[in-house]
Length: 141
Image 1: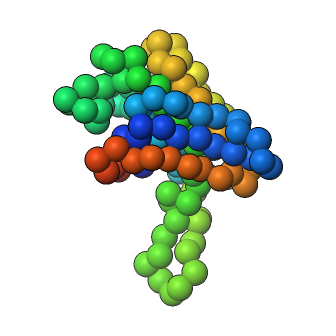
Image 2: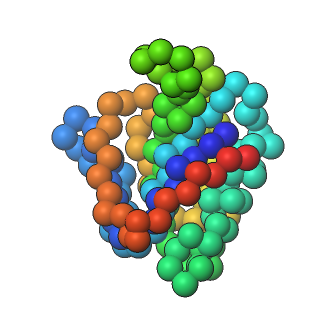
């Protein structure tokens, strides 16, 4: 499981012209990808890492500040561009495997007390964000 984590001052996800998820204060935008070998152990590790990573200003975390997270599924994080010009997505988990795991990460974050907004799995989404820094990390578990 991997995520691109960006510190933002605000972010939103729109599907078919409707905002389906947003954070309107400093927090983290999380693009979350799942691969074939991911399961419950990776869910728990990723949720802990996302909640506790000290990526906010003054080396704070969402756990210590209560800052929100906007989690958006992103299968293309497992795209490979090693050969040719067309990305290969064979390392990305199929939707029937990935969706429950993305939902489980969101649930685990909420169980930890995190405020979480989300996109819509599998939808064509417009993601808008205002980067803070910019400060962006690749998180893998």
